[in-house]
Amino acid sequence: MVNSPTHRLQAYSEFSLVLDPSIYEALPDDWLIGITDVVDSTSAVKAGRYKDVNYAGASVIAALGNAWGTFDFPFVFRGDGAAFALPPQGLMVATSALQQVAAFARASLGLTLRIGLLSVRDIRSRGRDVRIARYAVSASATYAMFAGAG
Image (tube, rainbow, N blue to C red; front, top):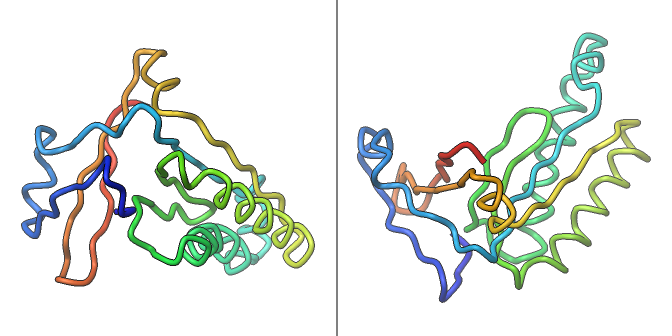
């Protein structure tokens, strides 16, 4: 995940291990959780625009990875958006990248991309949590696994 001296995760190569809630690690309080969503994606998909919807959703991950120079951060693609975690030092770069993706989606695809960021501390103050694990499908590819009710 993002190379951060405050947070390094072990990667598990056996899928059955990531089904065990006890291996999930808490994110640091000062990290942020981001989520994006294409507004009214269901209507766009019904109108045959599923490629545009997926493109807008995947563009979030591409923009963040390109802005940081690495895709080694926790993220999940959700079809019409994405969820991701980032350390506080990534906030300014992420905000700029996300604003650019939203502008691109609006201008080039005619879609509205909703973007939200919330600190892990704020999530925990509401009695919720976000925990993550890494699943290594190969030596060079890992996937973030999120758990919790945050």
